[in-house]
Image 1 (cartoon, chains in turn yellow, blue):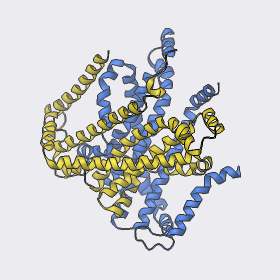
Image 2 (cartoon, chains in turn blue, red):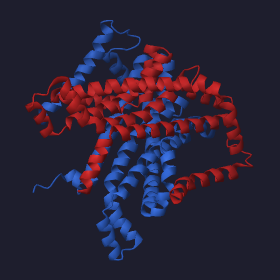
Image 3 (cartoon, chains in turn cyan, red):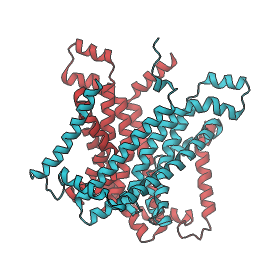
Length: 257
Length: 255
């Protein structure tokens, strides 16, 4: 009963909204810390008619999209290259394992020095964080190639390019999409974080301004917007995955036997 | 054996030597010679410094992470075991997970000030979602036959939790814990960059603001080593806790 599930979900959301409305009104939480839902929504409506708000949203999404695109292209290219050449794979494994867990925020001071509070800083961090997500998934995907299919292709004297195109790529594609989905949400987190911490233009810096000018309802409204952006990106990534992998086992489901 | 060692260490050594050689005569203010960075590393991160700045960071990280794990697993089991609760909570949880955790820092500063409590709460508020959602998924996907069998044998309450739900969900829980670990490190640094008087994030930003570039680089390297060390530690722990699971998977694959 999908209708019932949606109804329960909506009631859960409604419950949250009511809770946030009641807690400060009843004085359980000071209103200066947590404004009631109605005031957050009013602040949101106020923001939504200003041009500055939409510029900030556009800035954040631009940094997100450019960073994600660079990371995906680089991650896929490097991943396929490393995965297709066994020697490269063996040589780079330890380096990838070492570089991957380095927290991207460690680069914040470096980004500030190199680019100041510009788009460049945001891109550096977004690309660094998203690149590893894609690369690691592509490497998993390439390792998953069916040996029989690969050997068959070799017996038929497929060229290296044809092997990549017709054997390796279809196997790796579901992993690539998992990587893109993970990278898309990580990229948003890093974009907003950089803006918040070093003041690059975007939603994050608007939140910082709202905080320092003590505009608490506006601050909450903007945080809600970042959450909604995150949900929208998740949903879009899932839909894209289903659309492009419509032929794949994991999306088609098991064939009834 | 020697060949394996060569493969593991080869590229890192080459990269290190290249960096060292390429930067040896560097005049660039922002990219000082690696030799200088290494000297700064030894001078900066003395045992006293480690105790004064790295230890508090690690303590906050540990406290926040453990608390998040406890809350996440407990709430996850409760939500995962009840389909109705799950349907009601799912949209709300998805929303909270989608909020970039660092934007919660200003909100939490309102409630908890700028002390240690704030940093621990920030870490908890970011780490709890991947653990919670993965636990829910893990509990939901419990094998139906096993579940019915335990019910038929009258295994309920704590015993059901201990012998059915937690082991069944543990691979998923561990996956959530792994995601949460990298989020925890990020939030530890971010919360210290906002407001702190000690800690790794605070010190690195301090170096950057006073243009102590080699020291700043040494801090970045230390943070990198910390991230690498913690993820290795996690891998070791995972291998011993989930040994039965990996063994089972290998056996299934071979047959």
